[in-house]
Image (tube, rainbow, N blue to C red):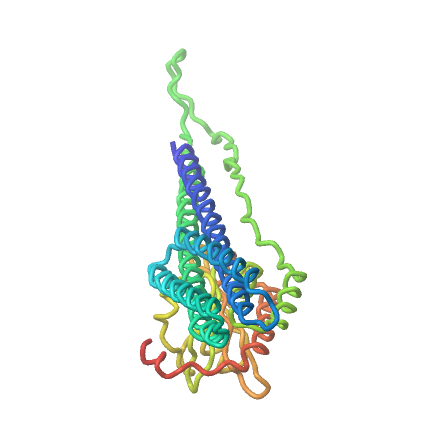
Length: 388
């Protein structure tokens, strides 16, 4: 019954994890599709602005540019409808409303510019195209960029919640299986002592005394085949080198979350946080693997705090926190500028990797490479500390 229960729990957990992994992949596909649509909208908007500028270009006929503008406006309307269908964040409708209003203003400006051209008022048409028309297109592109940021945060949060559910289900199933296996292990039986006297003789009616006790056979323990726990595979140094190379070429803060995701996968970490120094306190600057709302509520860590994060910043040395079967471990590596420690990289690692010197070394290398990128970042504002 216990074995059947363990198998049932394992099968149920595997089925749930299968569906959750499919949900995570679907979220990633939806995010990628939406961002591609937003990128396509931005490209079309830029082409629309260039086509409208062709209205007033000296020595060029207006008809081809007018036809081009009409086609682009139709494509923009179709793309916005697709974005609206795919957007899922709570604030998406507000940004879409801004885009619709901006495109309406652009259409009005385009109509006025064409009317001016028909009356041969080229200067007035140019003023409309490069004034209210260009402003409307810029407003639409900015709203689309803001929408992409909101949607990325939404999808990352949803995927993080799915991953947390996977961890909880897998961990619960593992605990139940471990308890069941412990219950199933047979205990050695205690051998009962044998009597010194023989039983009464049924044939002779005499009682025979046993002068020597019978020889006892040594108790045989039932063999138990316990498999050693699987060890985590060694860290991929080639992937570590590729990540450090990519970090050295980082030129935009927008690409940093992707780099942290690669670092998390490389270190087998459930999440990583970059803590940046401001005065005598550390603030969570960016992260991967955690709900963004949780990160925003993290408070400041004082330099003298009694924890591994503050200790790594204070001493400039790597610090670790030991994990166990239920709780992940952690590695905290300092990040140095030429003359000071500017923060730390904290990774919540699994499978006891906090004790692996190779994993500690790779975490230190990633922190050092991040320091060259983040050294120029401004310190955390005092308002953040007050909110925390």
